[in-house]
Length: 217
Image (cartoon, rainbow, N blue to C red; front, side, top):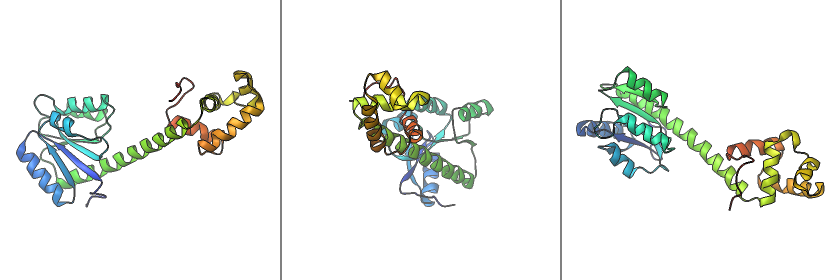
């Protein structure tokens, strides 16, 4: 199996065994993958750019910071790079813990290259889907930030109180006229690039916004 998009997706390899790094890097590069290898978790963290798409091949048994510790650190930092564990040291408890924290797979050395490639491709697809969602969310946030303070206020009422989002109800809540609310509603739908309140609710959810969201600068 050949990589789906070797140019835009990178295989990050973290293993303290120089021979493993060299042999795996060579094998994967021959298959068309771009590989960036690191001898330790700290070296990876110092160099990693989360804007780059790809996956992480991670050795479990490493000194200072082992694979599970790195996985936990990435998760707590909100870094969602898909992880494939490769190890000769881990057992069932470790593999269960890794999978619970979202690892794509936990492969014990020695493993077939075909199996590894299959998991890399699965991880690439997972990362591409995750980044597509993040991009959608970012776009929704950008459109929301283009609203005026009053428009944001009304948009959040429309999204968070669907049973009380008529122009008359919103006007009573805000102490303004229904005609003014109608004007704002039209501008909100236009700026948010939606055609209905249902779409507005969906877009607001994508943006991670609620009625308690503070005003944006």
